Length: 368
Length: 201
Image (cartoon, rainbow over all chains, first blue to last red; front, side, top):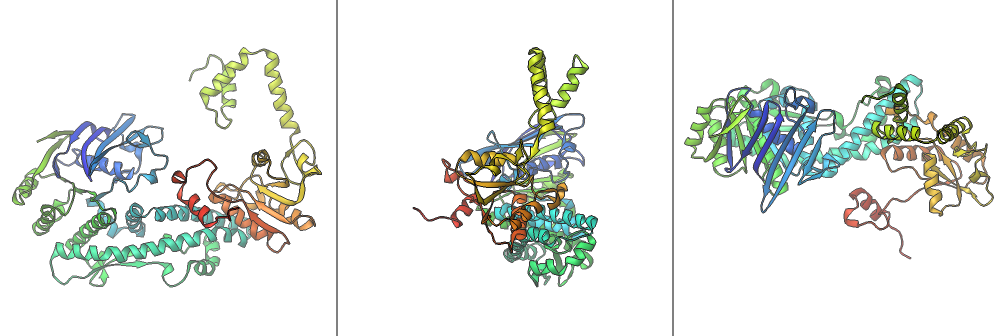
């Protein structure tokens, strides 16, 4: 997949920008806060219908304005399509493809896949299980529509069930039949999600291990992702009935796939506590590169790769390894941001890579 | 928007509370009313007053009715052994328009949704169970709720509540609309109509 043109209007700190991308590699260079990440985030919007940085659409409009517009022209083999995302204060966000609005955004997600590697990825290791589930959900939703549908059903029915548990507490009485009415929908959805997550990891981990080994070399480090789920040992219907007393007492559902976690481990130990900073960074980059490979493998075309400020976080050896993958043509289109222009220009020269260079300054993007 | 009169503003505010009517449409309706003769406007308000004061619900099926018992429940031509359960009165009208159904109805008045604070006690569910258990005539209950998540949950709950009573519980079929195109049918509907296929005769 190739992004040929990108147009931004009143998006974050960029008033207006028209960018044409001729090369496979695009570098956006400029000081911190100049608007480099804004360009990457705009592409993220076109792919996922939302920001990678700030989930509130209204806060992504340029200060003092009423509307932002992002438009991109994508090319895949012989066909080009234009995707527009526009948001006006107080109105519904619009996503359209070649002039046709989507009724459901879930129909759009997965059509223009993008993988982004950014400094905030570290939260995947440090934060709670929710972010790790989100990561797996976001990859799986792009690959399997039934997964996304089951996830929507599960999330909604769970919300209903939790409201119901609260109402039981108020009424001081439990209606078993009513509870069963929710459980009978939750159970199959949970089993589908559980199976899909387990199968996905089996498919994903070989890619992930390859990437990690490539990045750090053959130093005998063993990385793994372990899937933790209440559903591992028992079926969900049994779990729900076993936890009924506790659920009623706590007024929420205390078991299920909404409590799953993915343990990141290195040599069998918890990565968060026992991994060095360098190991953690390599882990994250390998995770994202494996995401790239997994999507490319299933979709039969390569997603666009967005590398936000990653040279800062890596030592020269790892940068070199990553750039070798780029030179070998492992990736499709690639956008790189860097605050230190000289460093990126030098890397491009050492690795003999042709790149389109953009300078970003105070929300203005200029070619050259 | 600035209105030339407080009276207009009040009227617009009230009319725009109706479903499907925004401020602009409300203003158009209000301006239309004051252009008409006084008689016509009072005919409207009188109809609304009478509606509000005298509207009642059938004691048996809870459909909108002029009397204690609705015309369907009192009709001799209706088959009292089949009861079709629907969410709202408008669903009764939709099924009546098909002219395919000769049984009677039971109007729940909504569906169960704990998020919105609607529980079984807010709906005509107990009255349905009571109606079925007291009757010797009723043989079949048709669940004709909307195919939404809440509708499905409510159907499941009703089925549970009716278990043990000597009635057959059925549900309306889900499938491809007449005159539709298979290609454009959504996957869930198409999938259901494949698994619940019927004999061709």
